[in-house]
Image 1 (cartoon, one colour):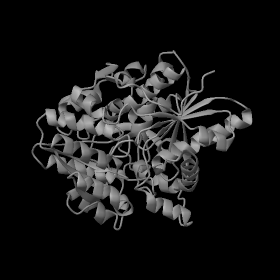
Image 2: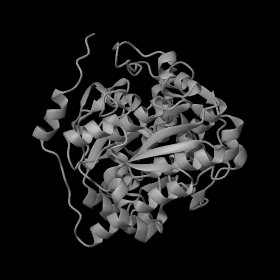
Image 3: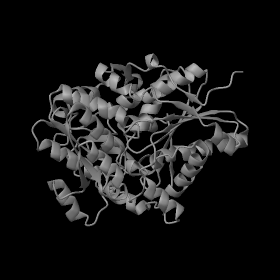
Image 4: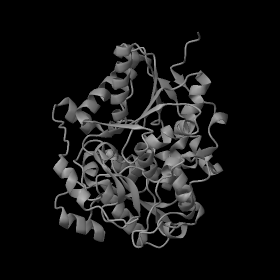
Length: 456
């Protein structure tokens, strides 16, 4: 049998020309977003006051399976797509496993992560609508970097509210954003009413994505010609990120390989949802079966320890309510080094799929994540982002299970980005200063008590 190549690239002509909307194949759809004032399902017109009009359409559409990718976005994608599917032969050898391990590498672009796939789409629609600029939040900085890059490409003003602990831990990502022309503010800040209120209520807080989202939405609403863009959680974002899974699906078919286990890190759901959506579609249609595993930080375990309920998407409680697995919008995660996963809730699509037991979820501590990251770097030669390394940790665990069972399964995981701006985290790990924090049941119960009461 012919040996598989280490890296599998698709031809440019094989790159997907449309995004896939998994909701179209879901028999039980995710619950609708609710207007925070009326508690009624939100309309496209209401969403359009926050998001671009085309994005509002994509957000609520649950019938159309395919959305054509605009030519301008396709042309931009060609800078770094199709992205490689890589077989991790050296990791396989180090583990002594009969399993085949593949990873979809999304870090081979200037922004350093998969986030650019949605950022360029969202800012394209903002430009088409004739807007002046956008506001957004960012956790570890990957999304903020991607928005800043897309904003520079389309000539749009960008303002980024960066979670305070990441603003301090990852100064170089902040500087990349500024290089692209973005204004970057540590959140919670004193520049918005919501930021001032959060600082007063939680003095010295390290911030959270929920806080930064509130500030970014307030900032967008206060400026004529601006809209808010979000890098995860939303249906529109998972739609754009489906290009990851579509390319992975095509590359595996090109190799004549079927995946058994598909793994992704999970914070708000953009990477995981994008990776698994086309495969989940096959499962929903009865065409194939897969195991899907979401991997989240033990310090912010929305799927594994959260409550499935309607909750605000932001700490300031001004955004639409979404039914999701949540830790409560007032939950402030510990200042872990995986800033991109420090969000209190999970995508409504993934939450519904998890509730239907169509996918699994596990949580891991950050020291075991960095142990996996170090092994991956030493065997495969790429320094992974802390977020991506959550998926690596469970891919290793699954590969060792295959070794124990002598089972030659195929494992696929998403390598969402590189970790070259995360060296303070790696330094803390190597110096033995990294600590694991797992919230107690009592700590998790308090924010849940403050969940909004939704009748019906």
